[in-house]
Length: 345
Image (cartoon, rainbow, N blue to C red; front, top):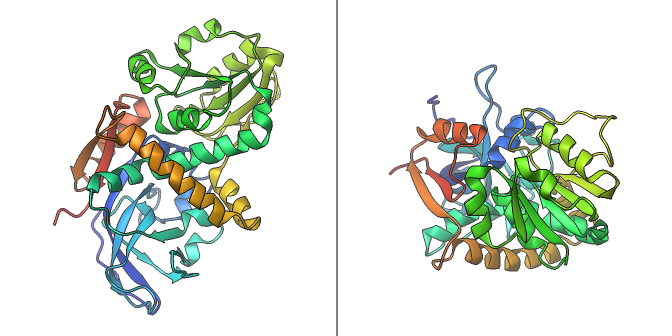
């Protein structure tokens, strides 16, 4: 849908979206859009529709905010669109918060825009757009488990193991001696084995082949209720914790199930973990640690020597529905990173 460019009010800026990434994480935003408020961030003009959010880079092309000059480049959360009107608040030397009224009530991480210089290598911008929101989820989830001594796990069983958040989590759990066991589909098995982040890999149908006598933490990126039930029944009282991180294969937020064997799933929400760091005065120290480790991870998965991912750039927005449909039905190649450049000029 083409909409006219709005006239800016005092204190507002207009951002031209340069590039954004679409990943299976966008399906999680859609599935949890009502439960967690994702649909509120970019209200759709048309009733019954929603603007799916995505992570990427933009440049301020018009400004009526004195402390945000034209030409400022930012990284953050954007709609699948060409432009976004914003109202910068809480401006610092590193970032600002979009204080638009409809964006209140959601965790601040989704309203925070970091000032970022343009990389000399556009590939790094694309890798950041693809991985930052995913890897920070992986990174904070590993922190969450680490702070709880990994629940004394002897093995982590990680579903949707071909997803970027899943193998990022396996990477971040490298300091735990517990085995990292992948659960994936048959078509993604070779990709998962080639990543080098997992101790072993099994197809979903072969869940019973995983040792059920080991103390296990289930790291759930699929959100599939039938798979969850099978995991709980297989590991029984050896299942120490069920950490629900994403929903690549679900159609809604999981309902409480009193008949489930073992511990109830605990939903891990990275934004709340980041807000907790802020409340404890640890945000700056966390981000310094995170940025260093993120750069190492991007070099590992996206470097020029044997990268785990190849970038596919889409000019304009026309391909977005097809890519999203591929994520929904699971047909998308996990080795491809989809980057969209909305403005061809």
